[in-house]
Image 1: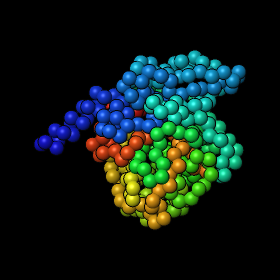
Image 2: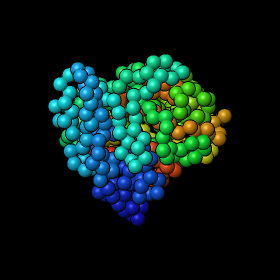
Image 3: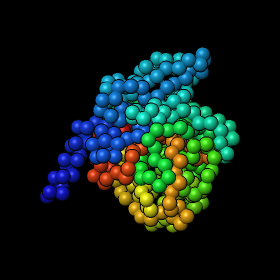
Image 4: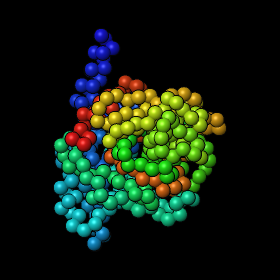
Length: 327
């Protein structure tokens, strides 16, 4: 009964805290990046979520929240975007200022990436109309010079909420830690969440899609070519989570509308990925070398310092469910 009661306290606390970063901060694994198209990730955040650029005159507008700790002000976007708009920047809500701008060319994607359409994907979250970042290949975001992001073999954790049915087998729909110059620096120079059904290095059961780790020169469902514990997450909205520590990593996934997280892998790193050589940039929607042939949808995501606890992860999942994706 004590275990059940403790879990219920976590659920209530998650709802009351309002923001995933409030939860992680309280647990001692603070957010060092917090990006969202749909809502504030701190209960007190009242700044901009993203920046749109209007095609007709190249003017820009910051899209913020309706209230502190609340949801995106999509009406302000609708009023401004009288012609086609793209998302030019996704702001970091954390104090670190790790804002994501459209990505430069890299050793794989040789041209700079485009921003996603600001109006391509509208949905409700918590009863509020908002927009997601809908990637349709050759689109991506990056910051190369960051503050507070893990390097080398330092521990870190990250999650993103993504669309469960918008994916492909292209490389690579990622969010997380990558190289600082958009070039492939070899095994262990990345640690980013991947969502999709690419199978050329490692995969889980069935036909996907899977939550996997992009560790550079390999997407990993575990530490072998096939990991039977890593099962597809079949849902409209998916919570995908990756945690890295010295010598090992963990993957979790779940339905972002209901239920708890499932441990998909927790163990040693694959051969030749220990120790890690993380470089500390942040990418979204692309691979570390700007491989930009993937599709996917991004709603929110954070990166933390340190290896987060299961209790904090569970509380964050409860907070995401309480946010009301698709409702």
